Length: 203
Image (cartoon, rainbow, N blue to C red):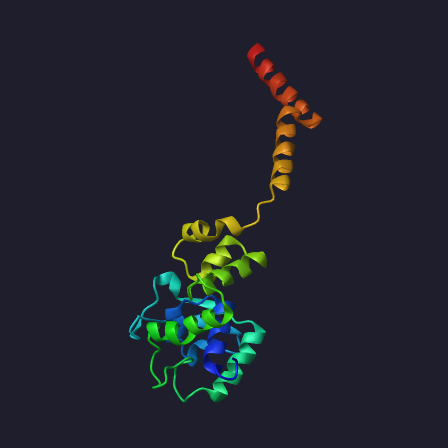
């Protein structure tokens, strides 16, 4: 599969390991792939018909980490890639049409693998789950995915963030203990304040 689908193999890896939207992948050019920084800059997207446009929102403009294995695959693909500015050009050198990506890659892949009921966008969800498993904060996930606001991140992936209730409960217990049973120093301080107040009243 890798040999027959050299372009699509690397495209799939890029989707899984960066979380870029399908439109962002189809619009990705080599100038935005910074091997020295191990980063990919998202500065454009593609419409369904292959027309280049601006990212979905201002948050869509972002810098995404490029893992070393992906960098190696992209370097190898660049040597085979047609002489075009795009990383994943169509057969004619232009932008891949969304429906062609679905038919020529996604439908064939899901049929071959036997995995049904998912869309190409599922790869983006997979990337988000990888980030969360790697203990990325909600803010880091938001920035990596290019969400306009963090509420979108929580609404979509909130159930994946770990919730250590035992640690939180232990903190609450300690706070409650401090309120109900203040430290001796607290009593001393309170006694001094009370005495000063009484002295002022008497004088």
